[in-house]
Image (cartoon, rainbow, N blue to C red; front, side, top):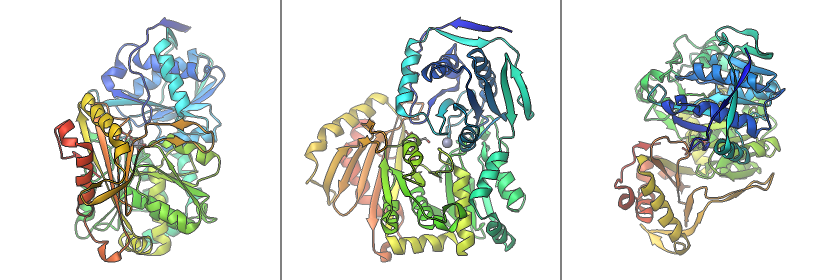
Length: 543
Ligand code: G1P
Ligand code: ZN
């Protein structure tokens, strides 16, 4: 079974976005598409020869075939070893942990995250580097330029490998180790949190519901919540990964996790609810009758992390993506630690975590994590919440109200306008860019603009600069709007509009966020002329 070298040609548009390359599944299945991208990854990292890689995915359609193909390509490219999750499953945070723990060169994760899966839906490939985190921009650029120059790829014509049982095997001299996807991750979680305290909470009658959304976290949540923490069987719903996620969007937000939302808003709901996404890096958290916005969740976790064993000594610093609300900034100020503001995408946290400048990071898009891995981690956030609930002995509602009373409430919402014509979206953004210098000092909807800029970031560790990371308009008094185009959509363009207003007075902490933000929303529509450009003024997803 020799390694075969196939001639190939560059394919347009193999540019990794916010997190890897995401396209329609049929595009990936199409001729040489996946092969070109994988060979470009190997070429861009200086070849695979002698190296160890981690491989796994979220269980979506085409994961199995893609994994076989990648194993054959790794073997033909001379890789020494590939560690694969049994059944091709590995959540993104578990893959990050394995890469770090085994000292691997990197890992290939087969996932389009929270996008739907199936033959007519989406597929994706992410490459993570040796620190366990997403490839930084310089590497994604190198991969992209390689996809434009590629002329050949290498692939073994050996047989498919049985990935259904743990154990060791080989392909053309390359070792393949199939591992239980959950085991080592569960051990890591036990080392971070006070499982005894959580078990005691559960023994006292505390009830939880976890919606795995037919995606990868099902087996992880069953093992950790039901088996190790003693929660009732059935605590985890939609717990068996399906190739099409049951036909749903595996995206843990109020729109897509509507079953869980309904249960938590009903009388007699469980005490705590949570959901995770396709590849297990996102989380949504709910209390009885109450939804915790991701930005608030980040702030609460930062303020209470010292209640968990791993963070007892305090946090080195915190980081949030620019569009994430400033709620965590107020916690950092109070704790006397640094708070970094990065562009959207987890890759920007990597250097800060590696340099020991921050311990906890988060994004408004349901992503929270810490320095235990180099990805956001859905179950980690759920377990930190559980640890905090167990130690404080209070419900989510009380904890949130106390948090707002102490730090003020940051009303926040994100409005998404999906599948809009790409040209219209770019036209809108470029007109807005052109207007930016004229905006400071002007007034819209009774709000006076203090600053207007196109966000650029200089990495404080390596000095690299990332420009064009979103338009940010700050108003006097602390309200803020941010507009940017998504880097993960697969149909047309998606406009993300982020809205924020700070309210220090506890007498006004009980408003509905959309109501509290009404003038800010109107100002955003006026400033960007959204209806004029895209013909719509209603978003299709509000979080
Ligand atoms: C979205 C989120 C972003 C997150 C990324 C990957 O990217 O907004 O915060 O890091 O998914 O999960 P976007 O589509 O906005 O580029
Ligand atoms: Zn994800």
